[in-house]
Each structure stands twice: as C-alpha cells, then as structure tokens.
Length: 226
Image 1 (tube, rainbow, N blue to C red):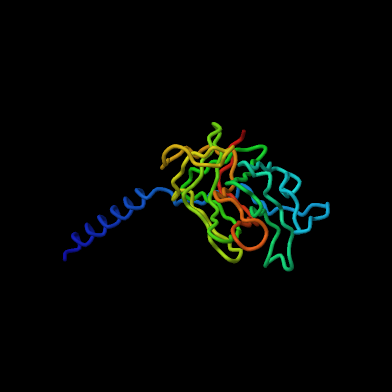
Image 2 (cartoon, rainbow, N blue to C red):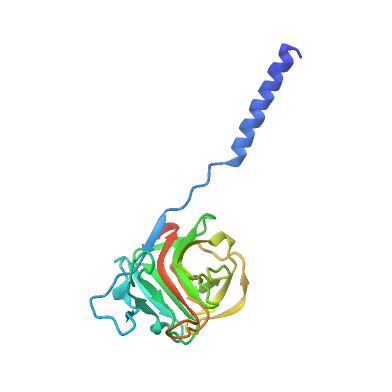
C-alpha cells in the first residue's frame, strides 16, 4: 500500500472515530441523592409489641413531611429496633393495616425531577407472605400513580433499587389505595411532589402471615424549587 493510501486510510479512521464519539453525546450522569429517610425512635414508651403509631414525629429528616394513605393508613406503625440494628432496624410496618395502604415523603422546599433514565428509588425492606412493596408517587398536578415493579417477597431485610425508567404506572385513588384507569407507560415525572411506597394487600396482624417492613428510603433525582 502506498504512503498516500495509508495516510488516507488513517485520516478516514480518525474522522469516523471522532464522528462516532460526537454522536454519542455527553456521558450520562446519575442524578444526586434527593433525600434519605431511616426514621427515628420516639421518646414515648412503645406499646406491648414494641411499636408507636407512624407519625411525623418519627421522621428523622426535618425537611420531609410524611403522609399516610388508604382506609387504614393510620394503622401503619413505627417498630423499634429489636436486638441488633443491622438485623432488625427501625422500620415502618404494615402488619395491622386492614386495607391497601401507602406512605409518602414530601420535601418542604423542592419537587423532584425523576425523568432522568437513571433516577431510582433505593430502599431497605423485608416482607412476609405474598406482600410486595412498589413505588407510589404524587405528581405536581395532584395525580397519584403506583408502579408495576415491586420488591418482595423477601424473608430478610434487603437493599433493593427500583429503576423508574423500567416502570409502568397506574393511577391510584389515595383514599382507597386501589388502582383506577389504564396503564400509563410514560407519565411526566419532571415535577414529583411526594415519593413513597404502596402495599396493596391488607396486613395479617401480629405474628407470621402477611406484612411489609420499610426500614429506609432513598430517592435519587434532581431537585426542582417549589
């Protein structure tokens, strides 16, 4: 091959390589941690089962507001650490609920933009029976939606990530915590008001049967000023 041919080939290779990188655009970046919540013990004495009613007083992050949904959302409890915190951490428990329920957290100063394909919810949970936990969102326009992706059943507390880009959604009636309408493939997640979880099965009461424990929730997304 002549020197001219070699030079031409090298030039074309350089141009094609540069074009390929240009088409790729900037490398994707993960959105920041928007909030983290792991609850806090209350000064009042626990009941006979080592629990308190779930309330704003049990939220450790002063910027977050807790909301409870469903006919028996008020029956969600905050369960104290039992033994070692790495084995049984402080958690919200759905065992004595008698209906589908939900719980969300709202940042006082910001909405969160979860439209980035790398936005996610990371939580530490365990479940009993056939219970599963799924993302619950309240959008800025007041619409509540629940996802098809779930965590559980899991016997031990595990940390799990939910990639929101992989989820399909349905509207949910927050008073009854039942789904309504049809599946929504691409809801507008650029301005989300509240983020939390839904358990669409009633609890079985104390003892083995059916419930969920939610020990920690982290949300990764871009803050949007209210």
